[in-house]
Amino acid sequence: MSVTSGAGDSLLGENVRRLLRQVFGDQAVSPSAVATPSTPFPRRSNGLREFWRGIESDPGSGILDLGSTSQANLSFITGLGYKLYTEDLFRALLRIPIADKSQAGLSEEDRFFRENLNYSDGQFSGILCWDLLDFLAEPLVKPLVECLYYFLQPGGNLLTFFHTGTPGQDVPVCQYRIRSSDTLEVSGRGSNKLRRHFNNRAIENLFRKFSSVKFYLSRDSLREVVIVR
Amino acid sequence: MDFWKRKEEPPFPLPRKEEPPLSVNPVKEVTPVSTSPQERKFEAAPPEASRSAVAHIGKSVQIKGELSGNEDLFIDGQVEGTIELREHNLTIGPHGRVQANVNAKEVILHGSLKGNVRAVDRVEIRKSGSLIGDVVAARVVIEDGASIKGSVDIQKPTEVTGKPAEGKKHDAPLPIPESQPKFAPSPVEAKKFN
Image (tube, rainbow over all chains, first blue to last red; front, side, top):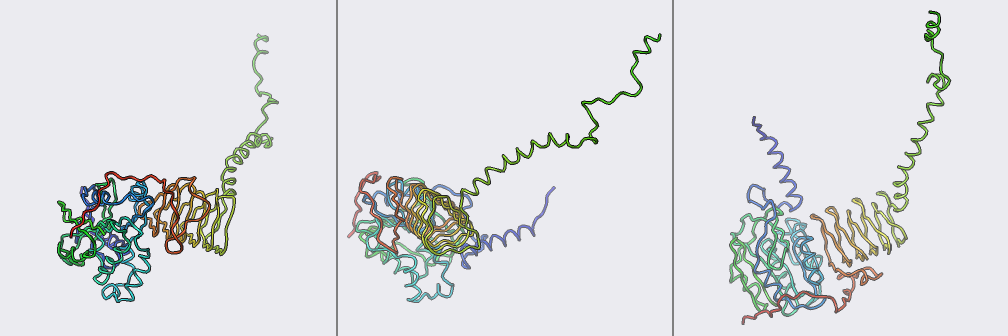
């Protein structure tokens, strides 16, 4: 005997959409628009491996994680002896009102960085940026890259991911949990629109100030880039 | 035949002295029941004792100033200032809103805490918990959904001294002993492209 639950499904869908709006703000798209990984899956990351290889083993140096906090990242990074700094910039970004996000003026931009990235020069030997730059409003991208440059020690590493989709495309927003030095566990946090498409030249231009930019291609639609100050 | 008739039981049995009718003497019925209250008292004792061992700040309570003590503390209200419970545990309940530097043996966070935390043992941030500040502890446990904005420094219990963690945005970072072990799988210098 089959039971049709169209009303129940629509109610459930509405509840999920409401939950996504609460978590990710109004910019979160409907869950049906893009498939987000419902269960965490492992993903090999050569970029992450190179990131750890390139970091100087300076006692007590800091690693800045710009993704959402997870026990896995905390345990792995502190297990290596580093001090972990966490700033969930994606969540902070969603707290900015939409009107300000679309036309984030200088004052709004300043306020954003003052509240969320108040660190000293050369404080970190590594920064995990994940795929944050794909979702940032245009006025915030270059200032953020500038900030990250100053926060890194000379020779420090920055790990970023870039989606290969087109601007406006819905892509899953993921949480990246470090399982080992070259393996991530990826779990979905919802979805969001890509703000722009970075090709390799655009990425090199964006990080022109840095001393090197290395690309690591993967089978999925995510490019890994390790940038060295 | 009379002999056999004598041996027959009387038509109305005499009441036994040992077994009086229940309705006659209600006091004797109470006697076995009287043991059960003792058991109840025994069961009720541990919660009473544990409640008295944990100081409780309720939802509607607001405190400003220095809080210190020699017993575990549960905060479900609002506290602003400093909290010193060196050898004891602090639990911030789901309604707790604390804006203070905390020094305790163990900190469990269900609500929100704005301030630096130093725990001799561990800091546990549950999924409803949010922490803005720096943590120095021997162990840190974060549940999925919990949020932290600040630094996490894992130090052995002997290294965690009495002072609360000093924040990056407030003061200079804490000095870390150089003997701290580091993992360096194969240190390779970053290649530079010109």
